Image (cartoon, rainbow, N blue to C red; front, side, top):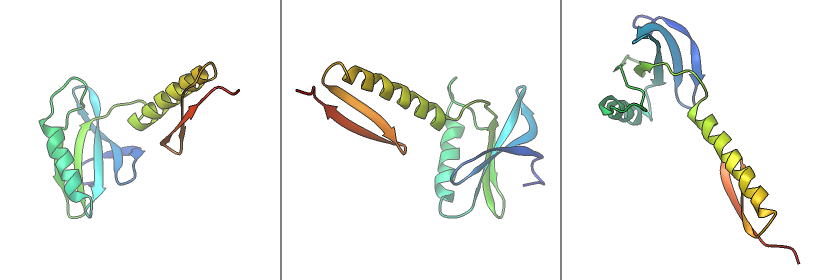
Amino acid sequence: MGELFHIESLHRRGPHSLVYRTGKVFAGKPVALKVIAKGALSERFARAAATASQMEHPHVVPLLESGETNQFLWYTMPLVEGKSLDRTIAEEVRSISSAACGWSSRSPALCSTVTGGAWSTEISSPRM
């Protein structure tokens, strides 16, 4: 990858891929390089890149380039700073869960909690 991109730093590590901050700039923003080793997930990664390249929406980060080497599949997009989507969703779920559980203390209700990333739902009734 060094021949294609100047890697500045590792930005994020996912379960199957790595995202690097590169030395490239696009529209005034640094460029991110997402890389996955060729293997079982290659087809899925290639499909995701092909789909992303066709999307045009103000809330979707555009795909700039994609390609492959002998060992890796990759694509680039403008780097978006901030919290990851999974962290943002987890925080929202905790917030909703907290509100639901607060409401359940006043009447029979649905109290939802998040444990280990999975929803657990309990119907509670008033104690007699």
